[in-house]
Amino acid sequence: MKNNQIEQEHKSWQRTVEFLRQENALLKYRLSEMVDDNEENHYIQTAEYFQNELLLKDDQLKKLIDELQAYTERIKSEHVSSEAIILMHNKFRTEINVFQKEYLIFSQDFNEKMLKVFED
Image (cartoon, rainbow, N blue to C red; front, top):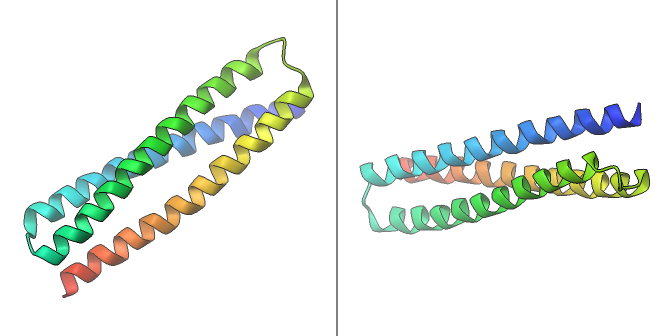
């Protein structure tokens, strides 16, 4: 039963990380479109800030994807104890949850600031 829970949560993390990767790509595309349509100086500074943040998110997502792949290989190994798997699992759960929360805040900030730019 414990193995089933770990496997289900693992699959959920894979879907979550892939969704966040796609969301980040979408935000970069939206930012690019907005920059093409608006060349005001104060807007360019905001766009540069978000571009840098989106690139950082890309790096963080790549790291999470790599760690998730390594975790997948470790839990399939017969040489890893149940206790070690549970410790890795809990650590990964925390990392995913923290990233999700931070990304949600970032995404909301992006949307609010981009809307504000077009209100001004």
